[in-house]
Image 1 (cartoon, rainbow, N blue to C red):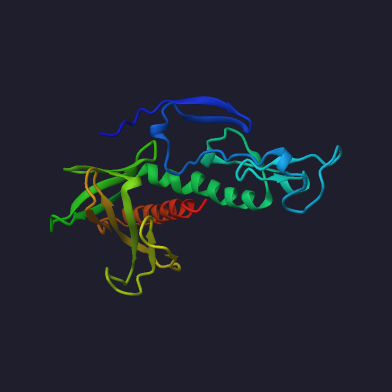
Image 2 (image 1 turned 45 degrees about the vertical axis):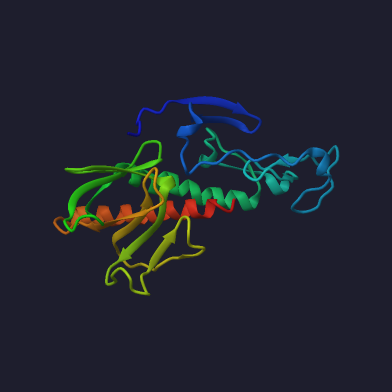
Length: 248
């Protein structure tokens, strides 16, 4: 059973103050560690514009990539929630753009996932659907499903997230959105079609066998259906974020 009482502590690093979990075992899967800085002696010139460093032109390290830049090429201070920084930190132009997009995920989609939404959930071992509330745990490590039954699915053990859109059924070649966290090497994103469900494949602890669950938006109330569709979009962005992190 996962704990929702995950304490945090304030730590100081060369890059700034960070609010991190007391136990590294409970860190969010969306977070990653600070990079190793390129040593000063290995960096006589700016790694972007090639300006030579001297007494006037000082060197600065990007807090996200650890590379060395002049002030002009590394002047922006941008929030970096994926490294748990309390305040905005200095980043190069390329990293700043990435961090700005991720901040939008933290400000919007992550809150949607934490609040949860209602779905009809069908497991592969049952033909009957169960009405369940699905939400992300406070430490972002699990999906909690609550109804008559209770499931906890670890994000780290999710193999694929397939978002179903209106007018398409599982197995068709033109399913609009597909994101695989582990096996697939590609991501295709759909247009503005409304999300109507999700196929989730995951592995349970102690087994390499894939389990599958199907989530379908509720038809009973339009407001619930809209909330569920918004939750699915947020889930897709979360899966995409984790997928892209593998190469960082």
